[in-house]
Length: 163
Image (cartoon, rainbow, N blue to C red; front, side, top):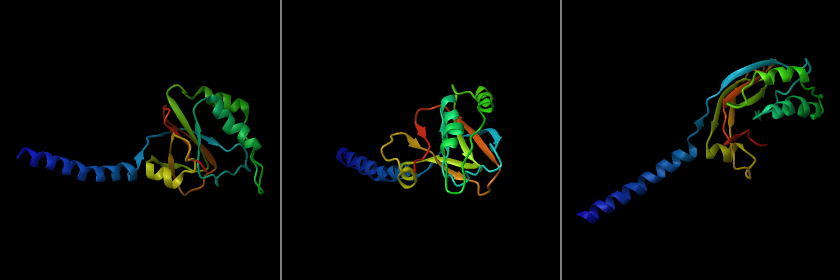
């Protein structure tokens, strides 16, 4: 009788392991976020709506890099991007709480969902060597004339998806 109970427990444990593993791997977890700032484009010719990812900002230095330096260096056959004004970003950074929040900068489209799972990482992320979990965005289909900054709780686990 005791051996039968032990065997039953082992069989039920093994049988329940596979569905739980399946759920862990495939089921997307949603990360809560909120809109912190809605800012105008730096100029009327600015177009970065083609960018399928977002910029993950952990501190003021990264904010300055993404919205000034990387935009001023970035180019494509169609246009040359111009970054934001340094004074404007200094003022914006003073309003951001980098101790409690990380920020996500999106260009000319609103964020609908922010999710992660091992399956989404394998399918939508190109940085297989990075141990941080990529957040996979779902976008609104409407192209806007604004850029958006969202905030999420500070952590050391997440990053933007890779190419």
